[in-house]
Length: 307
View 1 (cartoon, rainbow, N blue to C red):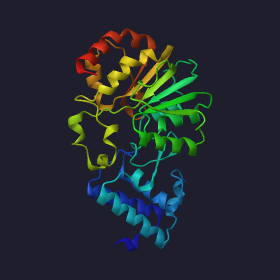
View 2 (tube, helix red, strand yellow):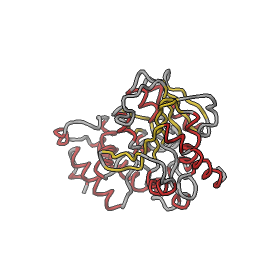
View 3 (cartoon, helix red, strand yellow):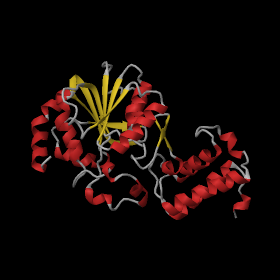
View 4 (cartoon, rainbow, N blue to C red):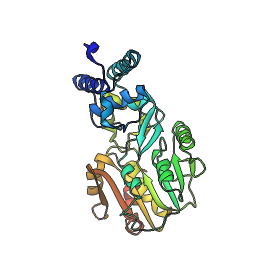
C-alpha cells in the first residue's frame, strides 16, 4: 500500500489517516492529525514548517519515506507526542528543543507574546518580566526574543526543566537576558519586583491526571497536577504576586479548564478572561490594584487548603 506514496502531500495525508484510525490524541503543539503528520514529515526532510503549498507535490526519496513511515509507526505504537519524537516544538514563531524534562510548549500565551501583551498592558512600560513555572523556558525566552529591552527571570522547581530552558536560551541567543532560578513559585524571590508576571502553572485536577490520554504520560507529572480542583498553584500565585508586582504591574495566568472553578471561587475578582483567535483558552489578565484588593480573600482560601 505504501508503494503508492511518492510526494510530500501523499505522506502527510497517509500519516493523518493512520493517526485518525489509531485514535491518537492531539494537543501537544498541534490540534489535528494533518498538522502532526506534517511535523513528522518536515522533520525528516529537514524543511521548515511553513514552506509554500506548491512543495507538497515534491517527491521524496526511498530512504526519506522509510524514515517517515518509521516515525509514523512510533507515534502510533508509543503514543509519544510528536515534539518528543523529533526533539523540537515551535512556539511564538521560534523553534524550541523539546524532551520529557518539561511539558511540550503549547500555551496560548504565545499569542500574547507576539502582541506585546497588548491591549492588556495598555502601553505601560516593562523593564522586568517574570515567568513562573517556566518548564522548557518557552514563555520567558520568547518574551526576551520579541522584547529585546526587557530583562526576564524564569523560575521552575525542576532542575531538569531548568537545564532544558538553559539550552533553549543559549540556542536562541538570549542567555544573557534570561535569568534562570530554581524556586517553588515565589519562594526564592524575596525583594524582587516585576512589571509583568506571566505563568502557565500546573492546573489539572489530581483525579483527572490518571484519565488523561496516553500522550500525557510521557510528560513530567510535576507539570500537570495541581490539587483537587487544579487551582492550588494558581491560588498561591494570586496570594503572593502582590508582593512582587510593581505599583501598576500586570499578572497573566493560564488555568485552562479550571477557569470556571476559579471564577466561581472568587466571583468578586474582576478577572479579564482573554479571548484568543481560536476562542477562550482559560487565561486571565489582572492588574495589580484589584489583585491587592483580593489578597485577604485569596489568603483565606489558601490557608483553608493548607497552602
